[in-house]
Length: 543
Image 1 (cartoon, one colour):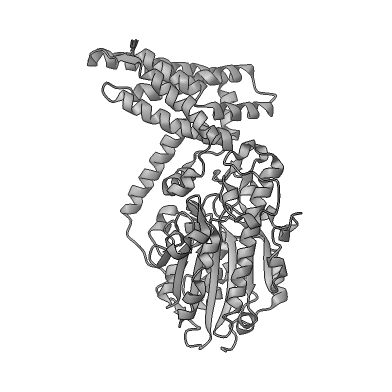
Image 2: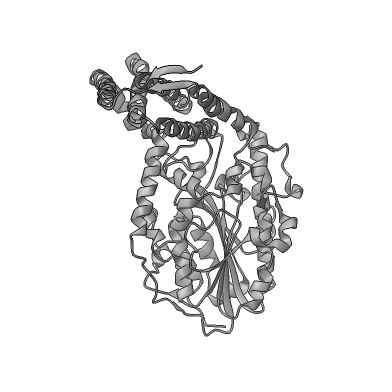
């Protein structure tokens, strides 16, 4: 038997459900804020749920109409349940950057978040409510009366908020001014507004003309019989504080520590806190402060400029794509290397070792200067245990589940550190490969992670927090360089100078210009002040 409800009652029930259950993460955040605000009035604490209920009532009053209400409410409940789980379990914020990441993710990455707890939450917050709502018959009045009822419901909600604001304005102003992230925790308005921003920007981008930059690029090494070969390794989700090079107690750099010529950069900051922001940012000619995602998508990146200069550029990917940075150059997806899939691929993803396969053959085929970009899957969570082969399970016990919030601190850190150790091993293997091509090339490697990771500090996991509130765990990233003796000699590098520079405060802002400097590219886009090698690197005699 169907339960009959007027549209106003139905809307209020939905609003109450969202206030109490779909905003669990919001109330957790509010509770933690109030714990540090002893001065917060009881009036603020008691009226905040009423304000949220009024906001939800306004939203669903505007969305509840005959014929389409069930579809709209069902879609919002299904999406909101996933959002609630992510915010509650991982402490993430559904900002613009996070929505971009969700849109641009691939199936393998998305399924890594599936777990038993996720299914239980989804059943409780989506499937069960929808089953109950299917028993409800919503009764709408004729158009004129329905519009009048909606208007009355909206006015009551607005008046309630206005009355509360008039009494507790200073309390609310202080709360929102000092905790701007609360807006990104309000479900479902958080992802609806963020998605609207993404759609608007993508529409705006589609109408922007494409701009080529660095078309004046000249390779000063092009006539040299000894060619430059630089491998750029883009790490994923590696954070600097877990690097033994930076004083971390576990030997996560055990392999690179045995290589001569490795330089560690302990003070590097990322452009963003997610791949969708950091990768196009670091490959663009813009700094973090001036970065414009729409502009970056519609102009050349540093690899395009290298291509303009006649450098052979190859992008090998084991991640969810290059986010537009490599759209116009040769691109190989590691998953498509069928001959070696069995060796490296399981669970629908591949170990990063697959990127080293076929590398020697490609290098041997080069007769010009070359740049190879290896885009790692690195330490992407929450399934850190899937990022390394069994033989790299050095630190135990481990957290072999996507429910990382249910693992002990020791288990989680061990698993994450094992993924870093595997990356360290691959970088060492890459250096050995480059050494084997010393007869033909001046070789170098530059590794930097796209962003860091939160591992439960203050209840926050993963990454993607808005830059304004992102913890250092998500922005402090490792960077490492290695150069062959012949590369050092060719460029007349002062190694003491390099060691000194390595301790300076650096960022992704330096990446674009440092790559051009390493490759001896002369272009109007190059800024020596942002090239970390410029003060130590001068063009030597060709060899």
